[in-house]
Length: 321
Ligand SMILES: NC(=O)c1ccc[n+]([C@@H]2O[C@H](COP(=O)([O-])OP(=O)(O)OC[C@H]3O[C@@H](n4cnc5c(N)ncnc54)[C@H](OP(=O)(O)O)[C@@H]3O)[C@@H](O)[C@H]2O)c1
Image (tube, protein in one colour):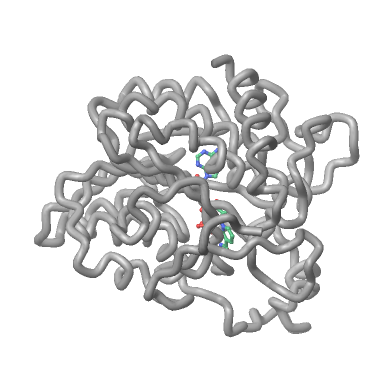
Protein backbone atom coordinates (compact mmCIF):
# COMPACT_ATOMS: atom_id res chain seq x y z
CA UNK A 1 0.00 0.00 0.00
CA UNK A 2 2.86 2.35 0.76
CA UNK A 3 4.70 3.21 -2.46
CA UNK A 4 7.98 3.95 -0.72
CA UNK A 5 9.59 2.07 2.18
CA UNK A 6 8.51 3.37 5.58
CA UNK A 7 11.04 5.69 7.15
CA UNK A 8 12.55 4.32 10.34
CA UNK A 9 14.69 5.95 13.02
CA UNK A 10 16.79 4.49 15.86
CA UNK A 11 14.42 5.93 18.47
CA UNK A 12 12.09 3.55 20.31
CA UNK A 13 8.47 4.33 21.12
CA UNK A 14 9.21 5.78 24.58
CA UNK A 15 12.30 7.80 23.66
CA UNK A 16 12.15 11.35 24.97
CA UNK A 17 12.24 14.60 23.03
CA UNK A 18 15.61 15.30 24.68
CA UNK A 19 17.03 12.02 23.38
CA UNK A 20 15.74 12.65 19.87
CA UNK A 21 17.49 16.05 19.74
CA UNK A 22 20.71 14.89 21.40
CA UNK A 23 23.56 16.33 19.32
CA UNK A 24 21.26 18.48 17.16
CA UNK A 25 22.27 22.16 17.19
CA UNK A 26 19.34 24.50 16.49
CA UNK A 27 21.21 27.74 17.16
CA UNK A 28 19.68 30.51 15.02
CA UNK A 29 16.61 28.43 14.11
CA UNK A 30 13.26 30.11 14.68
CA UNK A 31 10.29 27.94 15.58
CA UNK A 32 6.64 28.61 16.40
CA UNK A 33 4.82 26.08 18.61
CA UNK A 34 1.08 26.59 19.03
CA UNK A 35 -0.36 25.55 22.38
CA UNK A 36 3.19 25.46 23.71
CA UNK A 37 2.35 26.28 27.33
CA UNK A 38 0.53 23.06 28.19
CA UNK A 39 1.00 19.29 28.00
CA UNK A 40 3.00 17.97 25.07
CA UNK A 41 3.60 21.52 23.82
CA UNK A 42 5.65 22.49 26.89
CA UNK A 43 8.09 19.65 26.37
CA UNK A 44 8.24 20.30 22.64
CA UNK A 45 9.23 23.91 23.35
CA UNK A 46 11.66 22.95 26.11
CA UNK A 47 13.49 20.40 23.94
CA UNK A 48 13.73 22.73 20.92
CA UNK A 49 14.92 25.70 22.99
CA UNK A 50 17.41 23.57 24.93
CA UNK A 51 18.87 22.52 21.56
CA UNK A 52 19.39 26.23 20.81
CA UNK A 53 16.26 27.32 18.92
CA UNK A 54 14.46 30.65 19.34
CA UNK A 55 10.97 29.40 20.11
CA UNK A 56 7.80 31.47 20.01
CA UNK A 57 4.99 29.95 22.03
CA UNK A 58 1.67 30.84 20.37
CA UNK A 59 -0.98 30.69 23.08
CA UNK A 60 -4.30 32.23 24.01
CA UNK A 61 -2.91 33.64 27.23
CA UNK A 62 0.83 34.48 27.02
CA UNK A 63 1.08 34.68 30.82
CA UNK A 64 0.68 30.88 30.97
CA UNK A 65 4.06 30.53 29.21
CA UNK A 66 5.93 32.64 31.77
CA UNK A 67 7.32 29.71 33.84
CA UNK A 68 8.66 28.13 30.65
CA UNK A 69 10.17 31.44 29.48
CA UNK A 70 11.91 31.78 32.87
CA UNK A 71 13.15 28.15 32.87
CA UNK A 72 14.77 28.50 29.47
CA UNK A 73 16.21 31.96 30.24
CA UNK A 74 18.02 30.36 33.20
CA UNK A 75 19.80 27.85 30.94
CA UNK A 76 23.30 28.68 29.67
CA UNK A 77 22.70 27.94 25.94
CA UNK A 78 21.59 30.26 23.11
CA UNK A 79 17.99 28.99 23.05
CA UNK A 80 15.16 31.30 24.02
CA UNK A 81 11.41 31.27 24.49
CA UNK A 82 8.95 34.12 24.12
CA UNK A 83 5.17 34.06 24.05
CA UNK A 84 2.79 35.69 21.58
CA UNK A 85 -1.00 35.65 21.75
CA UNK A 86 -3.13 33.71 19.33
CA UNK A 87 -6.65 32.32 19.40
CA UNK A 88 -6.90 29.75 16.63
CA UNK A 89 -10.69 29.95 16.72
CA UNK A 90 -10.51 33.62 15.74
CA UNK A 91 -9.24 34.47 12.23
CA UNK A 92 -8.61 38.07 13.29
CA UNK A 93 -6.30 36.85 16.04
CA UNK A 94 -4.48 34.53 13.61
CA UNK A 95 -4.03 37.45 11.18
CA UNK A 96 -2.67 39.64 14.00
CA UNK A 97 -0.13 36.93 14.90
CA UNK A 98 0.97 36.74 11.25
CA UNK A 99 1.32 40.53 11.02
CA UNK A 100 3.52 40.44 14.10
CA UNK A 101 5.91 37.90 12.62
CA UNK A 102 9.01 39.32 10.90
CA UNK A 103 11.63 37.37 8.96
CA UNK A 104 12.17 33.71 8.15
CA UNK A 105 10.49 30.90 10.06
CA UNK A 106 12.26 27.54 10.18
CA UNK A 107 9.49 25.42 11.68
CA UNK A 108 5.81 25.70 12.57
CA UNK A 109 4.59 23.08 15.02
CA UNK A 110 0.78 22.98 14.84
CA UNK A 111 0.31 21.44 18.27
CA UNK A 112 -2.66 23.23 19.89
CA UNK A 113 -5.86 21.28 20.06
CA UNK A 114 -9.17 20.63 21.75
CA UNK A 115 -10.86 17.26 22.13
CA UNK A 116 -14.38 15.97 22.62
CA UNK A 117 -16.20 19.20 23.43
CA UNK A 118 -19.42 17.87 24.98
CA UNK A 119 -21.73 20.22 23.08
CA UNK A 120 -21.47 21.58 19.57
CA UNK A 121 -19.71 24.93 19.78
CA UNK A 122 -19.19 27.16 16.78
CA UNK A 123 -16.90 30.07 15.94
CA UNK A 124 -18.08 33.46 14.67
CA UNK A 125 -17.96 31.93 11.17
CA UNK A 126 -20.21 29.04 12.23
CA UNK A 127 -17.36 26.51 12.15
CA UNK A 128 -17.51 23.54 14.51
CA UNK A 129 -14.95 24.35 17.22
CA UNK A 130 -12.74 21.24 17.04
CA UNK A 131 -12.35 21.58 13.28
CA UNK A 132 -11.80 25.33 13.67
CA UNK A 133 -9.02 25.07 16.27
CA UNK A 134 -7.39 21.81 15.26
CA UNK A 135 -7.36 22.43 11.51
CA UNK A 136 -8.80 25.62 10.03
CA UNK A 137 -7.04 28.02 12.41
CA UNK A 138 -3.73 26.25 11.86
CA UNK A 139 -4.33 26.22 8.11
CA UNK A 140 -4.89 30.00 8.16
CA UNK A 141 -1.74 30.42 10.25
CA UNK A 142 0.39 28.33 7.88
CA UNK A 143 -0.92 30.16 4.82
CA UNK A 144 -0.28 33.49 6.51
CA UNK A 145 3.29 32.47 7.36
CA UNK A 146 4.00 30.80 4.02
CA UNK A 147 6.37 33.50 2.77
CA UNK A 148 8.28 33.43 6.06
CA UNK A 149 8.58 29.64 5.84
CA UNK A 150 9.74 29.89 2.23
CA UNK A 151 12.32 32.50 3.22
CA UNK A 152 13.95 29.98 5.58
CA UNK A 153 14.90 27.81 2.58
CA UNK A 154 14.28 24.45 4.25
CA UNK A 155 11.32 24.99 6.58
CA UNK A 156 9.19 22.32 8.21
CA UNK A 157 5.55 22.19 9.20
CA UNK A 158 4.67 19.64 11.87
CA UNK A 159 1.01 18.83 12.39
CA UNK A 160 0.08 17.11 15.64
CA UNK A 161 -2.75 14.75 14.73
CA UNK A 162 -3.96 11.71 16.69
CA UNK A 163 -4.64 8.01 16.29
CA UNK A 164 -8.28 9.06 16.61
CA UNK A 165 -8.15 10.13 12.95
CA UNK A 166 -8.87 6.51 12.05
CA UNK A 167 -12.43 6.90 13.37
CA UNK A 168 -13.65 9.39 10.74
CA UNK A 169 -12.91 10.48 7.21
CA UNK A 170 -13.45 14.15 6.38
CA UNK A 171 -17.15 14.76 5.72
CA UNK A 172 -17.18 17.27 2.87
CA UNK A 173 -20.99 17.33 2.87
CA UNK A 174 -21.31 18.44 6.48
CA UNK A 175 -17.94 19.26 8.12
CA UNK A 176 -19.53 21.40 10.82
CA UNK A 177 -22.29 19.02 11.95
CA UNK A 178 -24.93 21.48 10.78
CA UNK A 179 -27.19 18.76 9.34
CA UNK A 180 -26.22 15.63 11.29
CA UNK A 181 -26.33 15.04 15.04
CA UNK A 182 -23.23 16.39 16.74
CA UNK A 183 -20.90 13.63 17.94
CA UNK A 184 -17.96 14.95 19.94
CA UNK A 185 -15.70 12.02 19.11
CA UNK A 186 -16.54 12.05 15.41
CA UNK A 187 -15.83 15.79 15.37
CA UNK A 188 -12.43 15.25 17.01
CA UNK A 189 -11.61 12.35 14.68
CA UNK A 190 -12.59 14.36 11.61
CA UNK A 191 -10.43 17.30 12.72
CA UNK A 192 -7.47 14.96 13.21
CA UNK A 193 -7.99 13.45 9.75
CA UNK A 194 -7.94 17.03 8.46
CA UNK A 195 -4.57 17.48 10.22
CA UNK A 196 -3.03 14.59 8.28
CA UNK A 197 -4.65 15.68 5.00
CA UNK A 198 -3.15 19.14 5.53
CA UNK A 199 0.35 17.64 5.67
CA UNK A 200 -0.39 15.65 2.51
CA UNK A 201 -1.81 18.71 0.72
CA UNK A 202 1.22 20.80 1.65
CA UNK A 203 3.37 18.76 -0.75
CA UNK A 204 2.49 21.61 -3.16
CA UNK A 205 4.97 23.73 -1.14
CA UNK A 206 7.88 21.38 -1.83
CA UNK A 207 9.28 23.70 -4.48
CA UNK A 208 9.38 26.43 -1.82
CA UNK A 209 11.61 24.26 0.34
CA UNK A 210 8.78 23.61 2.79
CA UNK A 211 8.04 20.10 4.04
CA UNK A 212 5.06 19.03 6.15
CA UNK A 213 4.40 15.88 8.15
CA UNK A 214 1.76 14.76 10.63
CA UNK A 215 2.05 12.64 13.76
CA UNK A 216 0.29 10.86 16.55
CA UNK A 217 2.03 11.68 19.84
CA UNK A 218 0.57 8.65 21.66
CA UNK A 219 -1.51 8.62 24.86
CA UNK A 220 -0.38 11.24 27.35
CA UNK A 221 -2.29 12.49 30.40
CA UNK A 222 -2.73 16.27 29.85
CA UNK A 223 -5.38 18.99 29.93
CA UNK A 224 -6.64 17.58 26.64
CA UNK A 225 -8.76 15.06 28.56
CA UNK A 226 -10.56 17.83 30.49
CA UNK A 227 -13.83 17.13 28.65
CA UNK A 228 -13.63 13.36 29.05
CA UNK A 229 -15.96 12.17 31.82
CA UNK A 230 -15.19 9.28 34.17
CA UNK A 231 -17.60 6.94 32.39
CA UNK A 232 -15.72 7.41 29.13
CA UNK A 233 -12.37 7.02 30.90
CA UNK A 234 -13.59 3.68 32.32
CA UNK A 235 -14.84 2.58 28.91
CA UNK A 236 -11.38 3.37 27.52
CA UNK A 237 -9.84 1.21 30.27
CA UNK A 238 -8.11 4.29 31.63
CA UNK A 239 -9.86 4.50 35.02
CA UNK A 240 -10.90 2.00 37.68
CA UNK A 241 -14.23 1.93 39.52
CA UNK A 242 -12.78 4.09 42.32
CA UNK A 243 -11.73 6.86 39.94
CA UNK A 244 -8.01 5.98 39.89
CA UNK A 245 -6.13 6.30 36.60
CA UNK A 246 -5.01 2.86 35.39
CA UNK A 247 -1.52 3.18 33.98
CA UNK A 248 -1.08 1.30 30.69
CA UNK A 249 2.31 0.33 29.28
CA UNK A 250 1.66 2.37 26.16
CA UNK A 251 1.07 5.61 28.11
CA UNK A 252 3.77 8.21 27.66
CA UNK A 253 5.01 11.14 29.69
CA UNK A 254 4.72 14.58 28.02
CA UNK A 255 8.49 14.48 27.38
CA UNK A 256 8.07 11.16 25.56
CA UNK A 257 4.93 12.44 23.83
CA UNK A 258 6.90 15.39 22.42
CA UNK A 259 9.56 13.15 20.83
CA UNK A 260 7.92 12.60 17.44
CA UNK A 261 7.06 16.31 17.21
CA UNK A 262 10.68 17.40 17.64
CA UNK A 263 11.90 14.58 15.39
CA UNK A 264 9.78 16.04 12.59
CA UNK A 265 10.53 19.67 13.48
CA UNK A 266 14.28 19.47 13.73
CA UNK A 267 15.99 16.10 13.29
CA UNK A 268 18.26 15.63 10.25
CA UNK A 269 16.86 12.08 10.02
CA UNK A 270 13.78 13.44 8.23
CA UNK A 271 15.42 16.02 5.96
CA UNK A 272 13.35 16.46 2.81
CA UNK A 273 10.59 14.07 3.95
CA UNK A 274 7.09 15.39 3.35
CA UNK A 275 3.42 14.40 3.39
CA UNK A 276 3.83 11.47 5.75
CA UNK A 277 2.39 10.30 9.09
CA UNK A 278 4.51 9.23 12.06
CA UNK A 279 4.02 7.72 15.50
CA UNK A 280 6.44 6.35 18.10
CA UNK A 281 9.27 8.10 16.21
CA UNK A 282 8.74 6.02 13.05
CA UNK A 283 6.70 6.46 9.91
CA UNK A 284 3.47 4.54 10.54
CA UNK A 285 2.12 1.82 8.26
CA UNK A 286 -1.16 2.27 6.44
CA UNK A 287 -3.94 0.18 7.98
CA UNK A 288 -7.62 -0.06 7.09
CA UNK A 289 -9.63 2.37 9.23
CA UNK A 290 -11.71 -0.47 10.68
CA UNK A 291 -8.69 -2.70 11.44
CA UNK A 292 -9.07 -3.79 15.07
CA UNK A 293 -5.84 -5.79 15.20
CA UNK A 294 -3.54 -2.77 15.21
CA UNK A 295 -3.70 0.07 17.69
CA UNK A 296 -1.62 2.41 15.57
CA UNK A 297 -1.20 3.11 11.89
CA UNK A 298 -2.63 5.61 9.49
CA UNK A 299 -5.96 5.21 7.69
CA UNK A 300 -6.05 5.46 3.89
CA UNK A 301 -8.68 8.22 4.12
CA UNK A 302 -6.11 10.46 5.82
CA UNK A 303 -3.37 9.99 3.20
CA UNK A 304 -5.64 10.28 0.15
CA UNK A 305 -4.07 12.99 -2.06
CA UNK A 306 -7.40 13.77 -3.75
CA UNK A 307 -9.10 14.33 -0.40
CA UNK A 308 -6.09 16.41 0.67
CA UNK A 309 -6.40 18.69 -2.35
CA UNK A 310 -10.15 18.93 -1.91
CA UNK A 311 -9.74 19.87 1.74
CA UNK A 312 -7.08 22.43 0.84
CA UNK A 313 -9.46 24.09 -1.63
CA UNK A 314 -12.30 23.97 0.88
CA UNK A 315 -10.21 25.42 3.71
CA UNK A 316 -8.69 28.14 1.51
CA UNK A 317 -12.17 29.08 0.38
CA UNK A 318 -13.69 29.33 3.86
CA UNK A 319 -10.79 31.33 5.29
CA UNK A 320 -11.05 33.68 2.31
CA UNK A 321 -7.74 32.93 0.57
N1 LIG B 1 -2.58 13.92 25.11
C1 LIG B 1 -2.82 12.92 24.28
O1 LIG B 1 -2.97 11.76 24.70
C2 LIG B 1 -2.92 13.18 22.80
C3 LIG B 1 -3.17 12.09 21.95
C4 LIG B 1 -3.27 12.32 20.59
C5 LIG B 1 -3.12 13.61 20.09
N2 LIG B 1 -2.91 14.66 20.94
C6 LIG B 1 -2.79 16.00 20.35
O2 LIG B 1 -1.66 16.65 20.92
C7 LIG B 1 -1.85 18.07 20.86
C8 LIG B 1 -1.45 18.68 22.19
O3 LIG B 1 -2.36 18.21 23.16
P1 LIG B 1 -2.03 18.07 24.71
O4 LIG B 1 -2.34 16.66 25.07
O5 LIG B 1 -0.72 18.64 25.04
O6 LIG B 1 -3.23 18.94 25.31
P2 LIG B 1 -3.29 20.25 26.20
O7 LIG B 1 -2.38 20.12 27.36
O8 LIG B 1 -4.73 20.50 26.45
O9 LIG B 1 -2.72 21.36 25.23
C9 LIG B 1 -3.48 21.86 24.16
C10 LIG B 1 -3.10 23.29 23.90
O10 LIG B 1 -3.97 23.80 22.87
C11 LIG B 1 -4.31 25.11 23.24
N3 LIG B 1 -5.55 25.60 22.63
C12 LIG B 1 -6.81 25.12 22.79
N4 LIG B 1 -7.68 25.90 22.13
C13 LIG B 1 -6.97 26.89 21.55
C14 LIG B 1 -7.30 28.02 20.74
N5 LIG B 1 -8.57 28.32 20.41
N6 LIG B 1 -6.31 28.83 20.32
C15 LIG B 1 -5.02 28.58 20.68
N7 LIG B 1 -4.65 27.54 21.44
C16 LIG B 1 -5.61 26.71 21.87
C17 LIG B 1 -4.48 25.05 24.75
O11 LIG B 1 -4.45 26.34 25.25
P3 LIG B 1 -5.28 26.77 26.55
O12 LIG B 1 -4.37 26.41 27.68
O13 LIG B 1 -5.46 28.24 26.34
O14 LIG B 1 -6.57 26.01 26.53
C18 LIG B 1 -3.28 24.20 25.11
O15 LIG B 1 -2.12 25.00 25.21
C19 LIG B 1 -3.30 18.29 20.45
O16 LIG B 1 -3.34 18.65 19.09
C20 LIG B 1 -3.94 16.93 20.66
O17 LIG B 1 -5.06 16.70 19.82
C21 LIG B 1 -2.79 14.47 22.28
